Image (cartoon, rainbow, N blue to C red; front, side, top):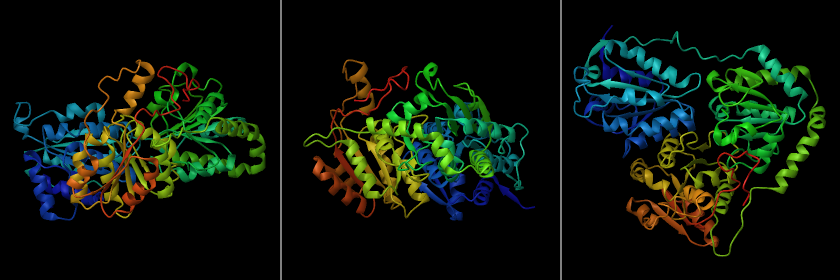
Length: 566
């Protein structure tokens, strides 16, 4: 068998794994891999302007497409610049493979130029990582990396490539399949546990399905919708689960938790059976843990056994793939053959109560003459895109207003940093999504603070001719922190007010893009129309009410029933 260099092995593995685009930034320790990629020319490389942007773009590509995202960086600062993006993907279970260059193996540990222990640094925020010390091991490692990244509970996997390994030679024997003694994710659920879950659901008078990001990761949205409709069970979603069940559906309660709907939080507090699917009961959902869902028996479906029983006591744990478990439940429902009318009668009082809560405390806001309300901008964005756009967000108030007022009816249409809450995520993620779907409308909803975190990636979008649209809700504040300061720190706005912000219209023009601005409510539709219809990259800036808040809001340490509504 002919021998290959390590850099050639990387290229061949990428082809075999179906990778069609890589996001990265070159440097001396990874230049040999770049040389091979360029000379081959079959895999598209997107040159970003910062390695954090590369990681977020790979993340956005993965979330939108369901494929493994790939990024590449050099050693030292190039590698460390990816860490925030890696941690973002790790906390949201996004499949990624990250390649980093490293100094030659003989120099590792000698404080060589641009040497850092990136394996040690990223160990807490990768699903797995590798330092390749022998080129003979590289084919196996490459295959393992993609397998680990996409299987079970997905996550980022890092491969650190010393320069001598990139240029060393060995036979390329690429494994057909991978078997790891210490890693065997459970896909098929235990049948008895599924039956136990059904018996609990069957008797429930006030059931709620609590759907998380696992629904989207496992492509289980159709099964979730079918189960909810068959048994007439309302559905509430986490931030990561939005789009996993249609937001405009009659059974949708919207998002739950700290900034969730009144109805969703009250439903969880009064439910007698909660069916949690692909969710992890994090603190933003549960609030004060002692007061969370006091009346409910809990069924917890998750592919990661370590997520079950971690935060709340569970009555029926089911480990396995969400899609397969929901299919099993649907099969039981069909076998039982219980008519729709029976489920409607059983849950009638509950559904009526939920409808009352929806009408009593809907998501709303107060219009003011001459003032742009951000919620209105998001509502109009939803109506004008007909809910068909891929929406990325930054983090903060812009993120929560989007989650509340844009009804996500389709899976993989909201790309947002949930677990880590990474400002600067939205723009590079939009670039990744647009690379995955060149013909789809991709919109990044941003705040004036968060957009500046990775605003240099405007150059990447322009260079790649990507028609990304950016909606900036400009209140000249770090809005979410300001809101907390208003409510809990006597309006002491410590380091949250921007006394200087760029002219975003001129900034767009400086990059060769289109820029539009609205300062009055009557200009919203015109700016959105021009921006969405513009050819190529466009920024739409809205000068919004400066001290507008995100409500409902559950204060830290409070129960989710203790919502601030105004």
